[in-house]
Amino acid sequence: LQVLSVTFEPGEDAEGYVVLTLAGDGALRAKVEALEVSLRDVTRPYLAPSGKLPDHGA
Image (tube, rainbow, N blue to C red):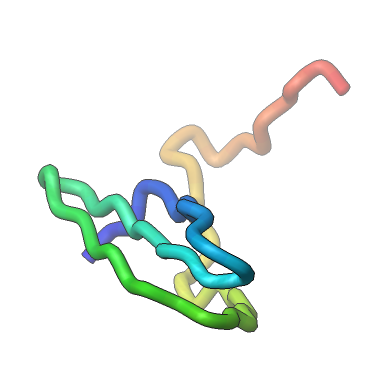
């Protein structure tokens, strides 16, 4: 699954819904009371076919 976005829809008090929008028109909606999240990239670094590093004009 490829996650395109993660959003929060507030409800009453501290409750609400976390919505995970997936590639291919899928979505998951989970009701939560509290949420603690830790993210870690588990993929290999992307190597551009040109072999060059991007220059964003910074």
